[in-house]
Length: 377
Image (cartoon, rainbow, N blue to C red; front, side, top):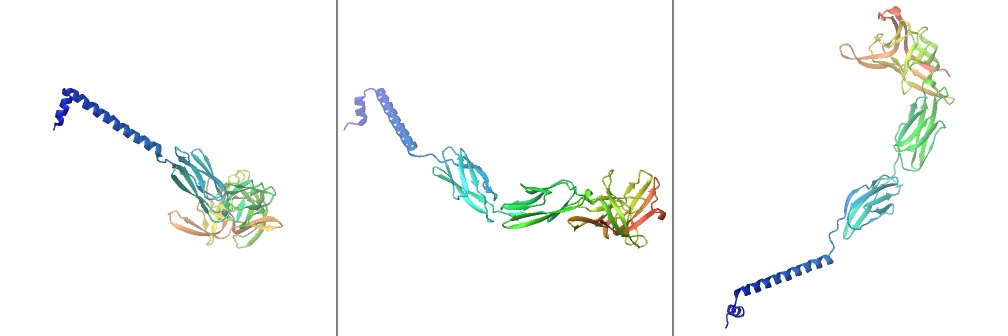
């Protein structure tokens, strides 16, 4: 037997020639191996799809009961489709945006749908929710406004079809937060009342509006009260507007001095405790002192005596009246102690500037207990 090395040696007498041959063969084998790997990789790319990259960037799919629109923003490098499983939910694909529209939900119950996004083998499902219809008018049952043009909004959710009836001096329209009403200027010289009625298939709401202010409060009144001698007195007085201080002036209660009053937004007449008012630009001043049931005078500053407004309908005209009834006032004395006083009237006094000496009896002008003012019809 011939040894293998001997055979090689017999073919290649020079060892260097053998080395060149060996390196050439190894290089050839390597190239063939790489070509095979590349062929396999090419076959894999041609036969398989890459992974789907469909993703939701943002979405707004919670809707009110009224018809509305929302959208879905997606991220993808491939074509995709969007489908909703309910007829009331419609879809429109515009590039990477999916426009979603829902019709009005006319039922009390909320409802839901599902939108399916598909790209290749990947699917994404997104829930859609829509609230049920609501009929709710939340404001008060009655409102009192001034004589001037007034605009106010009644908070309401009016999802069902409805009608509104109102007097000709009130105008209205639905707004985002409810229903807006505009009460026109009251130049009748008296207070007026109007009814606004909302009606739908699920219920109704009636709201009363009373328009009353300085224009309608001014006029002649009948005043009744008990004086310092505990005698009941009835006399005619006049309530007029003050051009200089934006107040109301009660004339005739005292023969010489007019009583200043403040009219609050709800129509209440207010007598200021310890209030000073100059009379006809002279040095004589009027000082209002609250009177207590125990016979003392309540002179602490910052407290008031109120007469709430009462309106009585007579021949379609609102007749006002005010009563300064007995009330309790809580206050702190000069030592910061908590005190209470039961007030049933007020006393008018004067003093001469600059000497404050209104506590003398000869300066007491009059005492008015449980004063009631009723406008003459």
